[in-house]
Figure 1 (cartoon, rainbow over the protein chains, first blue to last red):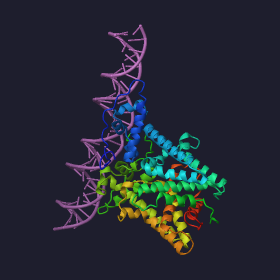
Figure 2: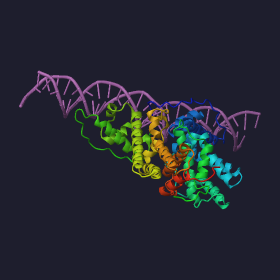
Figure 3: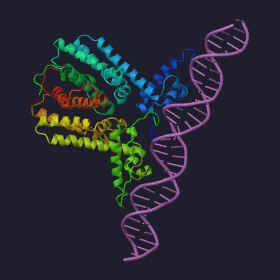
Figure 4: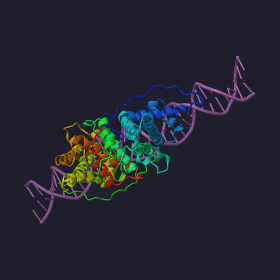
Length: 218
Length: 218
DNA sequence: TGTACATCAGTGAACGCGCGTTCACTGATGTAC
DNA sequence: TGTACATCAGTGAACGCGCGTTCACTGATGTAC
């Protein structure tokens, strides 16, 4: 595990970095977070985000990290938090930029899949670490369902506009979420499978799952 | 990572185990695999399956493992393989035991969700290690889409019987798979979320995704 | 303008840890005669 | 039935590794006077 066949490409040490001026020591915190995120994005495994690897990447010594993060766990938590903020922002922006209830719902779902496709390793991390999730009401829980809530809202809008016949938008938004998440993560696992493209999948998911009116249920 | 806040419950050393008789040394291989699987199921993390931990669990010394597995990676691969066999068997059995095309499709999907709910950590492992997947045609690839193929077959049966109006069973089976996988894994991540129960979700997924005829597509 | 000094940003060496793996071995079990 | 011996199933000690973390430090930067 620490030794042996671990053949992760060594990104090599990033060379000399200028020491921050006085009062600007805080900048290093941002550099550490950025370096750690980049490391994760490259290797695809959270375990490879070690204090020493991060330090090499940023161009500092490992103990310097302790001035900015209490321990390794805090760095990982910070990466995940920042990834969730990026993720939620991307989806909120897409929704805000689209027209009409249906357009907004679809734009949100499309942005979801785009984030996962563009930053696969960061997406994977979002829903990987169960131990970082707090109880409902805590911030660490809220940040994880923020985009889901936006999805529910969009679907509700559609119902209100008479476009969707969903009798339970929360349940149906959950089903849509599940399909989006499954599609995104299975693709990472089996890249050689002949996946339908995102467009086709969105048609199925958005139209099929409690979306268009389609008569009886069972 | 090796030290620090790792607070995984120590299952404690399993005590003295009888040495196998001559010619029965092979039995240990099965014990090792079982111990490793149990360890994984308990801790939920593949990293905790170390040679030493497995040895403690089984009640042998760590080097004894080398008589049966060439290295640690081989153990993990064996766990995953055996988990996939269990998984595929569970689904195949459920399908075989159900009546009618629709009954078989639904039984397969229900068995999928049941496996994930009953053995969450083992299910998670199935679609976690990307590096173990070979190219299409290889056994390590085939075992990963075996149940998907059964799903396509069931859906095709439904089309043939005039029950489903799907114009592309492979694509629609993919969407169903994605929804099942997403539902299963998101539940592990956010156990406190108010998930619709499996029954309700199956209705949505099986009926909604390219299942029941529902007019235009876009 | 010059200088003593406090502070800040960061370093280098060292620690103990669990790990995968190697190696020389031990002692019970079965077999040949 | 007895005994020498090969074989088999496993052991215990040791290795070098990268890790998280601690600790005493250094030297550049800014400030008080």
